[in-house]
Image (cartoon, rainbow, N blue to C red; front, top):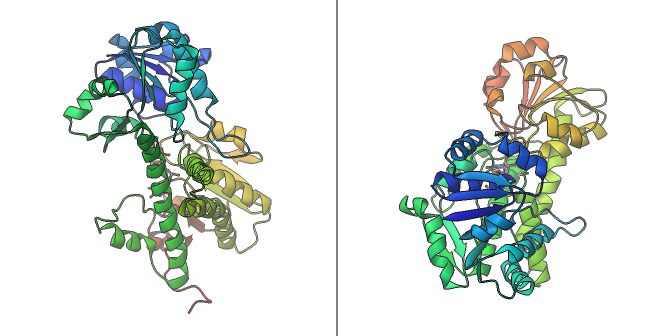
Length: 442
Ligand code: UDX
């Protein structure tokens, strides 16, 4: 199959490289000339484990190429994917679809022969209808089937997720799209990943419903964690105890500082807005969004409490800035709000992150950065794990103890057992891991 991938950001690049690896002929397109130039020189603009090798081997094999001009690859393509960004629109939280619609217009002008046009970007219900309308308006001769095919990739595990998906969802209105879409995913289909054909609007909603459900699941366990602290229970054991019930499932029950990243915050908000527009509000998700927003500042209060209730002039060593490990993505990272709140309370922040410090510099002010956990912990009044990078999973506590000013350890990702940290002489604060009920309860 000949594939044109419009948008060489995270989703476009990972999907393009994986499709090429399946043996398809893929051209990745992006308007950003410097990005395309970098890709042509085998420099990957994002951090994703395994992606550089995958891109290189497929470029070398002649199956993957990059360009800024979509006309030629779109004319030649059997399937054109739209994988451009859909950021939250400033002000109203709706997904900004101008890039998607812009791509649709350009595709319409370039298209030749029957072509399947697939929206891979996460788009609100009804966007496929609008993409089709735009294409027909722009080029009444265009012979297209417009399809929805959401992605479910996790950053840091995207290649594995693409190649071993739980399912592939394809929303079609025109039966002619079924065969080429099956062909595009044939290697996965042969791997027995369920290929679920639905209507286009159903497929668009599946993506939002999946992300909203996961965000809600995380938020649920976060609230249970708060309760654990009050009643003297351990959230990790609660998570295990409920997760072993197959109806609940053990994944996404890890309590922490709140979800962040490029998908959950944006997609939950967009679903809330869509539901309100249709006068069918999804109050569970409205509440999820607001709980998660408040949680980040609550995490800062937890740190302030750990340093004795007053953070003024205290130095806090922050370990981890990205919204999760194995990415350099700082979008909606809990660290941003936590650090801001700590600074508002008068704390001095020293931070270290294996990949996130460059992007963080543009988003945070007044933070000084170090070269390792130990570098930033030197002289600190508290050491706080905000993101669970592997390098923070085996900290040398005796060494830490010898360099900090005060032995206070706050583990917002529940990486360490309380006893281990306390054994080394640190005061320990985790998330939802009380040893006794907090004062004031029943
Ligand atoms: C997510 C979805 O998993 C993916 O299917 C979708 O396509 C895009 O959004 P991603 O944003 O890359 O992927 O990260 P994910 O691993 O899902 O984590 C999202 C956030 O939730 C992170 O901030 C993470 O720290 C947090 N999280 C996740 C928890 O706090 N607890 C958990 O148990 C799981």
